[in-house]
Length: 157
Ligand SMILES: [Zn+2]
Image (cartoon, rainbow, N blue to C red; front, top):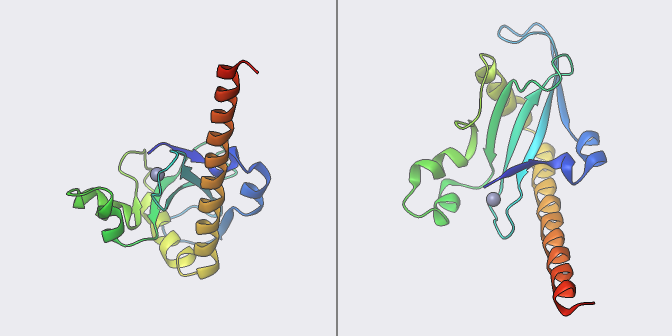
């Protein structure tokens, strides 16, 4: 499941609607702004219903402070399209640190922040689901566009 940043398809909306959190006096995190950059799966026909959040800071530009996997469906949903792989399904449901990506020593604190501050905000969770649907629709449309172009080439028009 290849993941691509939301901003690759929605450059304006992605930054307008990216959630940022200002942290001050946190026992385990440096003071400052943290942005939760969204990535979604760009595999056509895949309905994995999850987001990857890369936590970034304006002070460190491209550095990713934590990579969080967030699946809003329950374990059974993920298991239904990965039969027999309950361990992966369990990792996909809820919020976890993504095991395939680099984490920093702040990753656990950022995951806790994400769970306590953002996942308790229903409007934020709904926004992620909406972005997911918009992204998937863009992927679908790109695929349809590619297919009709191929068809045209074949028929020589
Ligand atoms: Zn997917």
